[in-house]
Amino acid sequence: MNIPYMRDSVTTLFNRWLLQGRDKEMEKEHNYAVQIMLKEIKIRNKFDFLDIGCGNGWTVRQISKYSLCKSAWGIDVSNAMVKHAKALQNSKKQHFLHTDLLTWNTRKKFDVIFSMEALYYNIPVEPAIKKIYDLLKQGGIFLCGVDYYRENRASHSWPEQCNVKMDLRSKKEWVDMFKQTGFTNIKQRNIRYPTKVSSEKWKQKFGTLFTQGIKK
Image 1 (cartoon, rainbow, N blue to C red):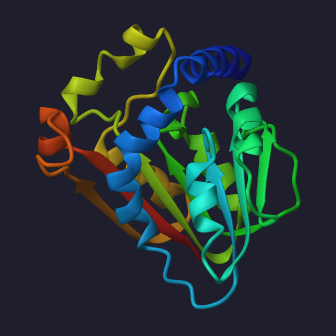
Image 2: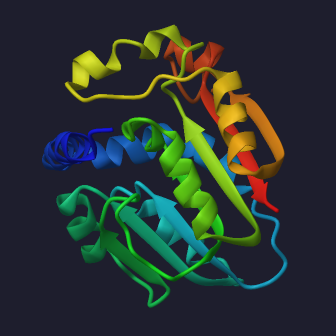
């Protein structure tokens, strides 16, 4: 596993995307799937939330508005994205850190961990899922969305286009990784985009692969 290479490559990519204004594009492009994913937060008590690969922090800012949200954290390997997220911070509930998931040393535990289009930058993915499991409180939920997966053939060229290593897995492999880590109540679905939301054919046919699980 070559984590230093992965981190440097992804950091460079997302720092460049921020300069190009891609953070707002990603927010717009992912919003449809993210809103569906967040509806799975059905906790009736106060909760702590973590977004892995938070970008400009838009999901953290949204979650912090929930009345039951005690704290909403976002981490990202892009120092530029985190700096931008901090500049947009508008609540004391919000916390942003520039860190890599696997090397993040924290005692804090979370009720909800969310990740959209981030985990496959970890080569391989399994240690990242294990770290997420460890960061969850007992009974906590992990919500994971990826557009880069084996069944979505349109995504296979992304590593070459972005010049970044990515870990390509199938739908079954994602479920198996959740099971092997210890997650229960695992659910998986494809969030397909209606034509009024996206004109991209792959989003309409395959969409975002959404996998979720509970820490027992």
